[in-house]
Image 1 (cartoon, rainbow, N blue to C red):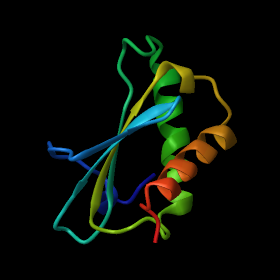
Image 2: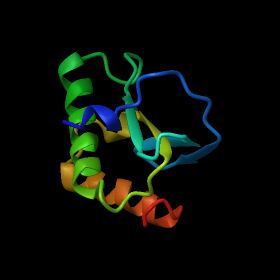
Image 3: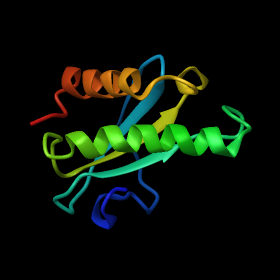
Image 4: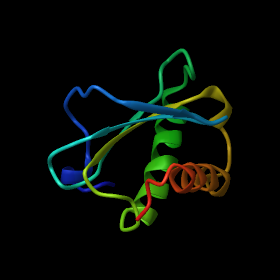
Length: 107
């Protein structure tokens, strides 16, 4: 589980959007000095709550592994697509890491 300081709880206006086959990533600068993360899976994407929670746990675990490498002072919102449901964690982590690296969001 992410530390409380790394959870994005309030409403934020996001500035940039990137899309992959598995999710849409929205980012915005913040003034807290730490990176914060939120994960969203709608009922339209997956009706089964167990699977919605599973994919959020998978992406959260990827972020926890890379938290030291991610640039600080940024809010991240991951909007998960249907294609990510039932995928292996390693495949999802590759996608997350690849996008963060490609968009220079890693230190």
